[in-house]
Length: 67
Image (cartoon, one colour):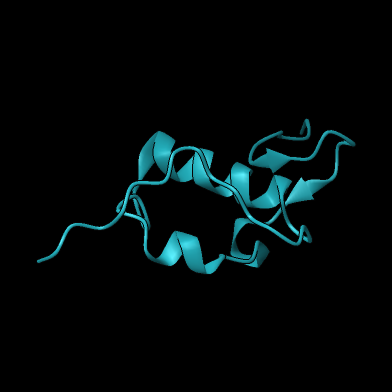
């Protein structure tokens, strides 16, 4: 049975576990937090790319609207 390639990978080929990618405070206040589909993928990759950085930046940030 051939190996199945699926999921997220870093540039070096190492697999990214989305559950282990820290979620910065900015993400918790974003209207896209807990979005599904393509938005979830983009958010995960943005967070993973900046993991360990002092200042997190997200150009897709949209403040949550009041209930």
